[in-house]
Image 1: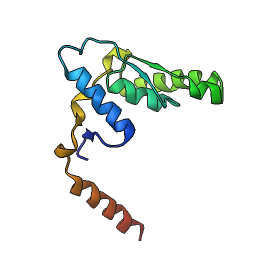
Image 2 (image 1 turned 60 degrees about the vertical axis):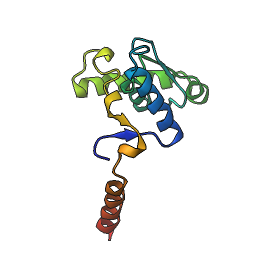
Image 3 (image 1 turned 90 degrees about the vertical axis):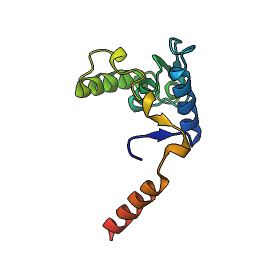
Image 4 (image 1 turned 30 degrees about the horizontal axis):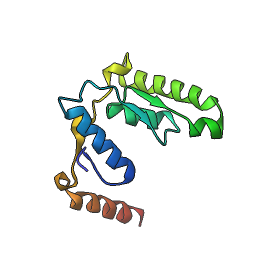
Length: 122
């Protein structure tokens, strides 16, 4: 939706709240630890892009063992290389300005994208 994220699903609500914390001058210097639903390096990157300077992984380790942490680290390293980041501090919080409210989104734009996808499949 034109490069913007919005509050919506449960996880989106959390991200929107994090965006508010990171934009608030009284809380912008607070350490945010991302926790909840992190099973992959992509999940960790999403939390970090929204301001988390660390992430915690628990349930995924219980389900898949400690190898999930190794995959998380190697995936994060590769992603950082692909995007030219030398340090996590280079990208932590960079997506916060893209988080907005539902009222800022052009919902018709997303509906048209879905229609185009459906038409392309025919």
